[in-house]
Length: 283
Image (cartoon, rainbow, N blue to C red; front, side, top):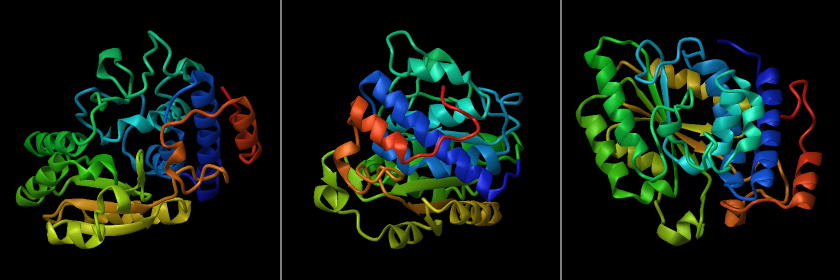
């Protein structure tokens, strides 16, 4: 699927409106990282992924796969799945409700189209993605596997085991993205546990390493294209995506305070006033 940059930007705005309204209606959720990753998820599902609602399979055979390792940013994932036709847009109003398929972290139990695995516990997505990518190689499936990690999440040791494994096994049909926003639930990543220069780290681990401006749709599309070109050459690929938590809403940007905090009605109205109404309309 190929979509113009302007259309992708407008869709990302709609996704941000969805995120604000979902978290406000639920009275809980994680809006900060969701807003920051709206451009990436929009570009994946409306431009880069070789996948569609009609062809999607739980086992991932015959199409690209995506794993949301940072499962708490589920609002952006559900919004994009809805806008791309995997689930009914009206379902977004049930986010985090008791008995709703759209739980706070994606759950495979509810068989939501687009969700391959539950990702409630941080640190596991890269390992799962490695397994899925190896399975594609065994099945002679030429499609790719993508996963999104958080820069706070990579403090988990399992991430680095998977990083070593992917390079050692030359899993070159894998594209991982790190949301490099410098924030996590307890504060700035540099103060909680400084992870240093991520570019140098992943290069040292043997990965093809790319840097992306994750809130610039033109650069997101460009770097996703470069990542695809880099696959199949003996190395896994990592994209380090520089974003701002809360991007798109001025009072939410660049702070960890909105990592896992719901907007009240007044705050939601203020946030929505900064995100223009789009042709797709709110749920």
